[in-house]
Amino acid sequence: MKYFIVLVVVLLVVWRWRSARSSSIEVKQQRKTPTQTQPTDMAACHHCGLHLPTADALPGRDGSYCSREHRTLAEG
Ligand SMILES: [Zn+2]
Image (cartoon, rainbow, N blue to C red; front, side, top):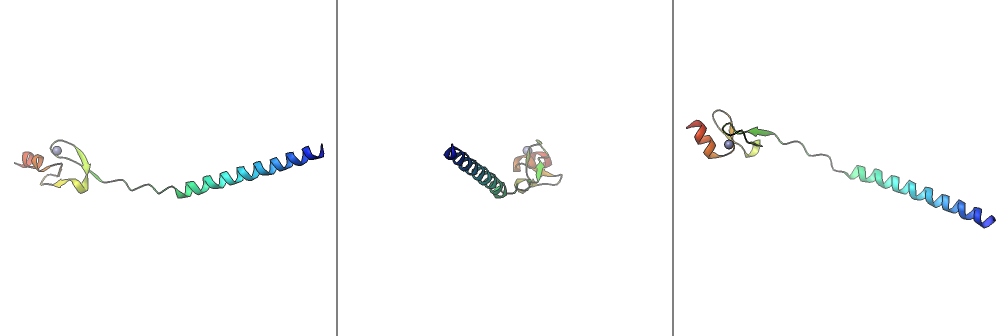
């Protein structure tokens, strides 16, 4: 009976140690999660309405365009 109590105590200690360790690992993983990237500025094509990143848009007289063809079609 004495050994059974010792065994239960050891199991309790191991269980508590394991649960404490796994919760600290979860905290570390949350810290490792990279910060979200900044949202990209979007522009709508003035001719067809397609949304594309501002860096990829072609600037025109009336606004941004998705392609040279649409800029030519819209601005003549
Ligand atoms: Zn377009």
